[in-house]
Amino acid sequence: MSVGCPTVAPVDLESTVDPENVVDVAIDHGDGAGAGFGVAGDPPSALSPSRAADFMTCPLLYRFRVIDRIPEPPTTATARGTLVHAVLERLFDLPAAGRTPAAAAELLAPEWSRLCAGDELLAALITDDEERTRFVADAAAALTGYFKLEDPRRLEPAEREWYVEAELSSGLRLRGYVDRVDATPAGDLRIVDYKTGRVPLEAYESSALFQMKFYALVIWRLRGVIPRLLQLMYLSGDGEVLRYSPDEADLLATERKLNALWAAISRARETGDFRPRPGKLCDWCRHKALCPAFGGTLPPMPARAAATGGGGRGMDTVVTASPSLPG
Image (tube, rainbow, N blue to C red):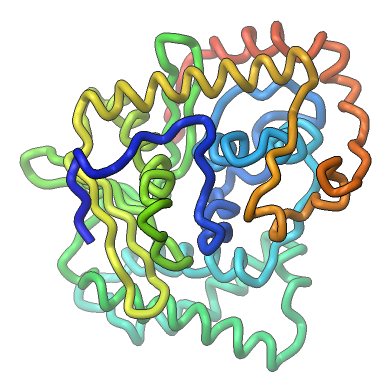
């Protein structure tokens, strides 16, 4: 589907994500649950799209992931998404003529082995041969969905799995990994993100596009160019593409929302008040047993957070660090 600028409602702090696509929210391409924020209790220094989505969905979930840093082992669903992303990245290492469905399928086994070699939790996730066969078949089905949407032989991406980071004038540092960036000879940019979940319901389109506007804002601040097109590729089933063309007003509105969101996170850090927000996603939450909304008992706030008086000063200190762009 193609979405025009006037048809998508803005994302506010009450936004939630489509329960059908909770897997895609959990996959953060290396940012992980609090990765890069230091040990438990360290003040968060930056904001990624997934962690922003966490706080908007449930402030307590944000605390569990970023401040408490409670481990979340992978599931077969998140592992499948990670594998599909890895294969699609490696596919473009091949000569254009060799980027075929068969070549992508042949990458599944070696990419899975490579991922498992670097992550013992992934390696321990699937040990049964029958389960492994189903897992690979599900990943292959997502790749089939991809080839229904575009022909990679006709593309030469400008960037793949691109780490981006920029600092706003407010001092808020934004960062994340962009699946793919395509560029025209004229310099127009298209941001592409792969989703292994289902196409979102219309009510959730704006929250699905929030991640893409986040990346568009970062790239605009880095390069001074507003991406011409944001493209979400849903690989499940027959596949579908959600497109959106942002403008300056869109990205300035996104910047205001992110600054407001960071202010809310800062207040929560200062007060220690990360309230749960029960909703449809609670059935998928790994931390439900700890949640007061379901009779659980919260763990104490990590000592380092308490030592900084809630983290306000610590955040001010690290937020003002100069932005960088590795690689």
